[in-house]
Amino acid sequence: MNPSSTPEQKQPSIVGGIMIVAGTVIGAGMLALPIISAGMWSLWTLLVLVTTFFIMLASANMILRANLRFDPGASFHTLVKNTLGPVWNIVNGLSVGFVLYMLLYAYTSGGGATVRHSLGLDIPQSMVSLLFGSTLALCIFWSTQAVDRLSTIFVIGMVITFFAAITGLLPALEVEKILTLRAVPDAQPTAWFVLAALPYFLTSFCFHASVPSLVKYYGKDEAKIKKCIFYGLLIAGVCYTIWIFAGFGVLGRESLRDVYAQGGNINHFLAAVEGIISTPWISYCISIFAFLAVVTSFLGAGLGLFDYIADLLGFDNSPGDRIKTAAITFVPPILGSTMFPDGFIIAIGFAGFAAAIWSVIIPAAIEWKHHRQTGASGGYGARIFSTTHFVKVVLFYGVITSIFHLLSPDVLDVLPVYR
Image 1 (cartoon, rainbow, N blue to C red):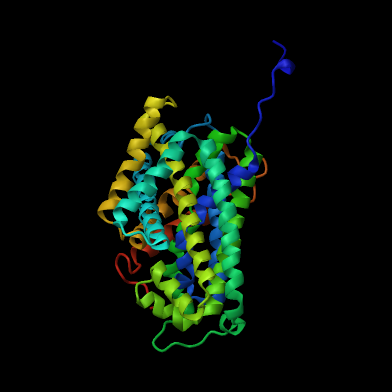
Image 2 (tube, rainbow, N blue to C red):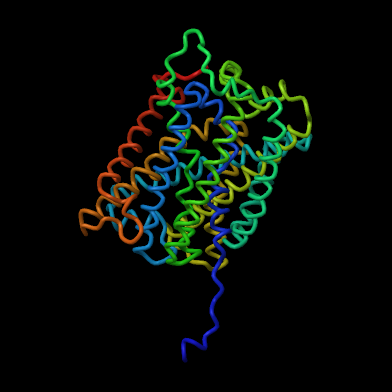
């Protein structure tokens, strides 16, 4: 048959991929970033935010380049096994599984709590979490295209409610609070608080399990996937910057310290904001934004884990195998959210250590080994983010971030925190 007579298959839009990345990155944990950043305050926060953006962009592109050396559909299991060997494959498998299962548990728990609080439901939170998680799991089981369309709709809703909330907060925002670093008795120098904050920012930009899913969705269209990654991360970075500095300007450093001292959960932050802003519709906008953020994060992380499990266990795309994949992917975190419904913040924190391993350290190790074997500098359009020296920088960042997480108050309680 003449190839020219074959109907051209319609390629998926770049918008869907951008929304998958942005939706996976932007989660309800974003609401806690002003609390985590209060110790560093403005300049250090901006530096950490920009640095983490470029490190995570670079490591995502490293995963993409590795993925493009395999057939579409190959996930982290295949990439690591065929490049770094069985030992690293075990480490990677444990890290990926731990992070994604913990995130799905956190999103199911947080989503159930948000729905129950927002709607004033008089039923157990565990039941709401079960319904919340099962509904989204069904969407992922149905198809990647369903995730694409839902993510696009929900991210648009997130943008609307986010900027509506920011607009409502503007009258109470004081620029002087952002620009002035007020001394707090017994507090460490601001630079010290950078150390404990790094794992939280790394986790906030973590979406890397979705990269193989993008390759599976778009094929080997490297340029299109790179645009999805860059613009998706950029949307997240802009939203983070606006939200953090809005929190700084409305609450101030002392109030944020009090929020952290109370536990640092989302409800403590919202209560502090409501103490200054008494307009109900602003609270509604923030609640809706939090709900949509959890939904899109669940869809992105769930899609990544779904494809990873299928690749790891050799399941195909038949209905029977997709049911098996869905059961292994979603039953543990959903059941966990019904048994332990209030572990949202703890789960996010403990995911940081493993996230540094598989989203930064392992991609850098794969890229480094590829350089040593081939002498390549990353190929077309990738020289800035793939030189050997830059790979070492990414690797170093991942190692120190994982160490800082072990030293954080969540684990060994060595590093200072602002509370």
